[in-house]
Amino acid sequence: MVRTLMGGLAAGLAMFVIGFVFWGTPLSGLAISKANDAQSAALQLAMAQNLTPGGTGTYLIPTPDTAQGTVAYGQGPIATIHFNVHGFAAEDLSMLPTGLAIALAAGVLMAFGLAAVGGASFAARARLVILFSLGITVWTLLAEPVFNNYGWAYWVYWFVTQTIGLVVAGLIIARWFLPAAAAAAVVEGPAARAD
Image 1 (cartoon, rainbow, N blue to C red):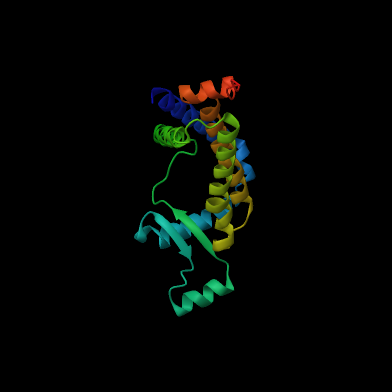
Image 2 (tube, helix red, strand yellow):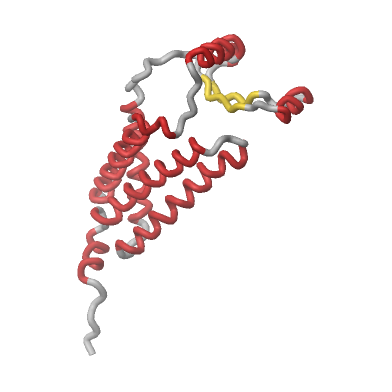
C-alpha cells in the first residue's frame, strides 16, 4: 500500500510538471487564438456589461433557449465563454498549490487502480495505461469540438498534452511501483516446469 501511494504521488508530480511545460510556458500559445488589444478591450467591456450580473460561470452565446436565441445561434457567430468577474495577474501562480494537490490525488487514484490489476506484467499494465488514457482523452477532449461546434486547435493540443501526462504518470506507476509480488513475477518470469 505504501509503495502504491508513493507511486501515485510520483505520478501526480510528473503530471503536474508535464502540465506546466505544456500550459505554463510559451508552448501554450499553440492552442490559443489571440485577439489584438482593441478587440480584447471591446470584448472585455461587452463581457463586463452583459455577463457580470450573471456572475462567474460558463455562458453559451447566444443561448438557444428562446426562438430568438435559436435563430441567432443558427446565424452565428457563437461562443462558449468561461467567464470570471474578477481580474488576475497575467502570471498568477496562486492556483499552483491547488493544482498540485489535484494532480497528486489523480496520481494516487491511478496507482490504486493499477494495483487492482494484480500480478500483471509491466507490458500488460503499460497496455492498460495507454489504452485507458487514450480512451478517456479521446472521449472527454476530442468529442468537445464535435458536440459543441468548437475550433479544433485548442482541443487537439489539450488532447495531446493530457494523453502524454496520463501515459507518463501511468507508466511510472506500472514500471517502478508494482506491488512486491507482481514485481518479482516480472523479474523472474514464469516458473520452469519441474518435469
